[in-house]
Image (cartoon, rainbow, N blue to C red; front, top):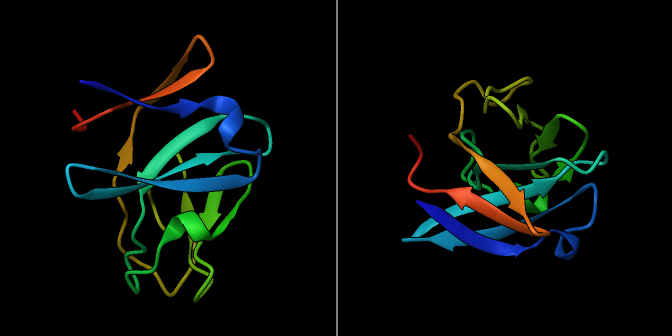
Length: 104
């Protein structure tokens, strides 16, 4: 099912926002190149909100301990995290971000 999130311009490139769907916190990130990605909002290392972290072109970095996650796969790219986080499919239609939830 596609869930309407927000207009794409509501998220500045290089930033992320937190949305909650059915009690599940999800970070919606817009990369510096403008791609929109969705990933669990909880760092697998310390249960810190990833939406408050630092977004690059392909990664999001936890602000608390520096663990980086690949935005496309959810795989950790640096310690102290070693467990992946879930990713969600997104698409943009008429300038609005949609998220596929629950994940396939």
